[in-house]
Image (cartoon, rainbow, N blue to C red):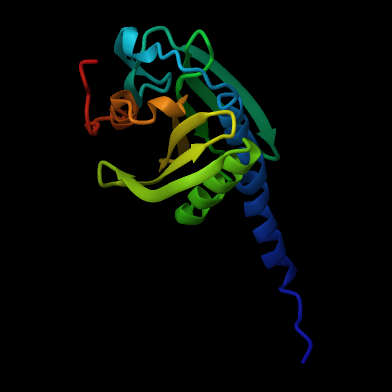
Length: 209
């Protein structure tokens, strides 16, 4: 018996998921990673600058970052909805070190039901678009409530990065710590990543850096 195509409504439903999350959002996330993994220098400023707690503009999430991070916002229309992206990012003067948090507000019509699949797809395609290699990854959770994924990557240009993705209340958060490979054991990487907290939930650590 010859295999038959699935009913049209199933094909449409599948395309509807693949397009918004599988393509458009991945472009947003991948561009953010690509912009950071471009240089490798040994100078390391992050341990010589002041760190402070900062909040994302939504007032729901916070973390510790070097002072005066740059804030940028953009909107990308997609059918009946719009992807709203906000980024907090600190970049060292030589461009070799980056600490950043990207918040993507997902339109209501986009399903985030398959969280593990979404997180895996984002991780793989973002790393590929940024021309980096994934050297390790594992599932994680925030405050024992929200699913996430930690991904460790490296580039031929000598950069090392640890990225964390979380899906929280129809938002996708991306934390990124990018450093020269020579600094891949820096205590600031985990301190930054573990400082992320959402709403009233305590972060894993709020270090007095």
